[in-house]
Length: 513
Image (cartoon, rainbow, N blue to C red; front, side, top):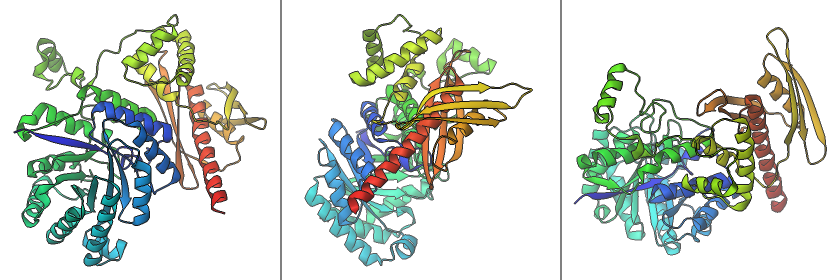
């Protein structure tokens, strides 16, 4: 009988740990709701004990998700598990996911614990987590560099203590497909109880084998795959959800396996994550890259025009890549706009609708054509926090190929207006330097990118700015036909995130005192 593979998505936890991929509270909730529409079985919402912000995000997601299980990560530490349960207990289907390292190098140098102490701790804390939550997952961190005899022993003990899901992670992306298959098979043969519970794997992509190793694990008996959208995550990332989902959709017969992923939601999910994080996938990325269904070769074009199956093993429609058609314009009303937003699969309240609709009308006055992707960018851009410290009032750029560029930027702050004037070789550089004169923080520009959304000379310019302040990174985004304006607003967006984070830290310190 074809086995059902459960998809455990850790985009909001492991994925967010990827440099430049941090998300705020509302962005995480929007992403979680889209993951639920995608058909993800388990959403790992975060690491509740990591920070008050993570705790809040996990709690909100737990209370806002209906169909998917909501998991929360915790070390095998009582305080972590208490925080995890407090955050996730409001979920319809809660899960505590607790872990401890089991490889010799981790136990000796990181944990400074003996194997006996590690096994005792794991058993005790799994039992404690099970006393709070009906579903507990246990992970042996760095499993693929661990001793199989030790793993079989610790797995048996935590299963008896109440764990119903056992995760065997390739934490550093070290293993290979054949080796991983043999590794899992060997542990199963040595364990008394592993065949009675769900086996999960979490494969990193350091050697580019995350997806291949996950498929090898399915052959070896794994029924849960831990992955991320666009493959984001620590270092080289994780096994890519979209690739695994489409492999099972197209070649499920090879693995005698299927998933519950709604593949038509893949492109939208990928685009949403890119819009939120500002991190785009490379054009030749499988499934979701811009060139994934593009054909430039004359031979290929002729073949596809004759029969798409000559060069396409799956259709663009199967991953939700439909026609990017014009449907709305400057004369469209609020009801039509809301209907369009809903048809794109987004949920929006009246307050957000008012914000995004106003931006849509402004854009429609400037653009000849409004495409679905334009609206998606406006929806992401429309996520507002409760307070903006700085707002752009006006800017003036004087630039040319025979003069030094001058920028004047006026910002509105809660106290007063501030103006910065700066000179540079280009308009964006000059504008950024002018903004820096208006703020009382020493910040560093880590990265800046600008891309067009859809096509045409009047396409939206989508700007992403990454700032560094005190070893923390803040990503700002904005979109406008005026690319300099988009760049300035993206910079200000990142600064406002920085200021809100500083306020939260000051508030936490005040409460602690």
